[in-house]
Image (cartoon, rainbow, N blue to C red):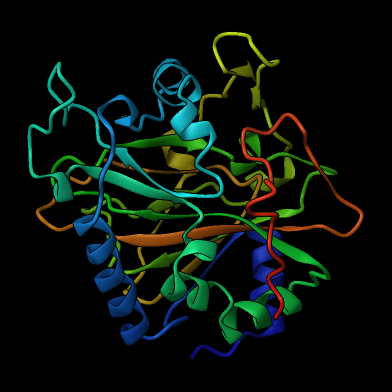
Amino acid sequence: MVLITQEHIRKFNEDGFLVLERFITSEDCDAMHMQIQEILNSMDVPIHCRTEFSTEEEEQLRAQGNADYFLNSGDKICFFFEKGVFDEQGNFRIPKETSVNKIGHALHAKDPIFKQVTHSPQVQELARKLGLVRPLIVQSMYIFKQPGIGGIVTPHQDATFLHTEPLGRLIGFWIAVEDATEENGCLWCIPRSHTRGISRRMIRSSPGSFPRTQIIGSEQNYPDEQFVSLPVKKGGLVLIHGEVVHKSEVNSSERSRHAYTFHIVESQDTQWSPDNWLQPTTELPFPPLYT
């Protein structure tokens, strides 16, 4: 297990991201991978809930924001798919286990393997060294980045979708379950972009209105040369400030790039926006990180 130093914390605060190799063990990664296969084997998604995942703004509003399946997934284990994997009748064109883009958004609470990783001693230690007093876990996802079809994730800031007052209270933990390389779609970030605020928000529309969500503001154009690639080995962590600009490219390789990611928010002196698509529920209030 990696030793977390004050230099690591300084680097994260300066750049808005941090790469920590060997953050969890290879055995932890294998356990998550095996558990996901079990979840996929029992996957039963009604045709009307077969929602393709897209990060293009208009498609996101149509395919995700308009779907109750997405908006109600915060306290469940739900499935989101790559583009083009369904025919007109909603049937799979390819094997369903290779069609999934991600599973979310409550693995951290609903599955014992992912709950154990999320609350692991090294995660709690890192949160404490970051100075977090009452961090809550707000969501989690298992991302597949399927070989050959794993789609692009366009430049974005997580605080666009998970907004707090004040800003600066959201942090993402992105754990490589498999090696992440430039060829199979590793993360790219713009150093120090977390100091510039956010340029847009995705919010819930008022009850009964259509579409169910809307984007306010507009994304900036980010020159490719501003980004640095963040390849990381299996078991490594990329820590992501909620306002740092990041992206990933298409997986053009023959290897998948599985990752487990979750977001925490410092709840002390913080307001979780009531306009966020993701809200705590009676079934699942946002659980505390510290145990």
